[in-house]
Length: 289
Length: 87
Image (cartoon, rainbow over all chains, first blue to last red; front, side, top):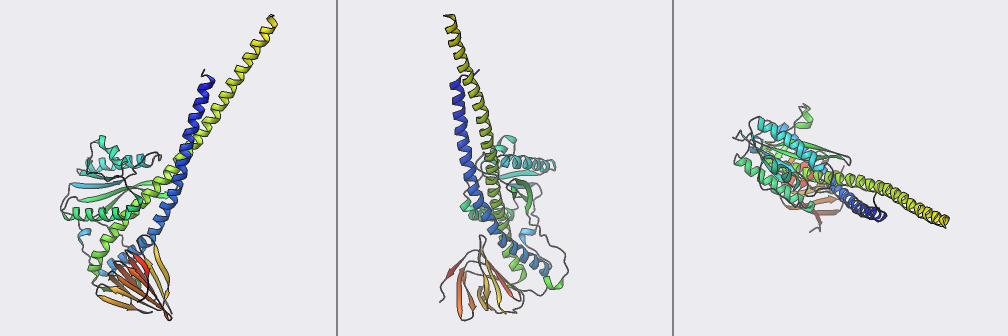
């Protein structure tokens, strides 16, 4: 059985751990607030943009734009994987990495050549040992620079598409549903698919005039829509990471408290046993005299 | 009847409110919007958006974007927006 001082040391170390997990939980909670605020603030723009885009496409009739055409390339597929830089956030990265790997294997089974562009350290670290071709990952992401990151990524993708570097580009990220729930997503972002509902309400679609022409506006809107989608993914991923870390650290703190309670019980029992033993020794020593 | 005006940037709703008249820098030249304007989507370039309400004016410096104009509303989606003084 462990000695009293061993147990005491153990309790001390678990207490230290609990202190750290509790601090991490509080920090993640504060960052989560900021991240969800940013994600919410980006929503109106995205919604207004897709409404207008839908209207333009509906009323412009035949639309053509390089971002909508399938590139002349039918083997290569690019997957953009958004994970976090840091761990200790529960299953956040693990679930996304595993789900993405399954999709990659499916694509490979269908004869595609998959290349992964990783954002954050955790995705590339996972895929490195799994025979997946990767471009140089982008790491050390700063939430304040998500706008620039989304810009750069959108430009890079548009450029790659212009060079027919891939037949399709997918985006893998954790969608933020709620604090307790983040769902791995695997969505095609290029060539862009326009989800246009076939509503024949003449008033909603018709009657718009365009300045300049509809197609020129479309040329301006599509890259913007791509960028907004990427930005939204970055923001949701960040919110999800912090939410996931908060819940993971919360249960870690709770587990540490439970462990401390158990250890304290063992400690007290051992201490009492030692005292009893000593008393018996004194009493029996006195009796022997 | 006043126009419902919204100026939205990717990071926030920069302005919501009402105005009698809106002037915005279109890519094909500055345009003004009064209530009951025809439905229109226009690209805008960086410049000053001016809102006229009663006798007073409000001005915003905006980045590139576009404007969606309906009968009684104007939605400006721009890269950036900050309030500025009226010239």
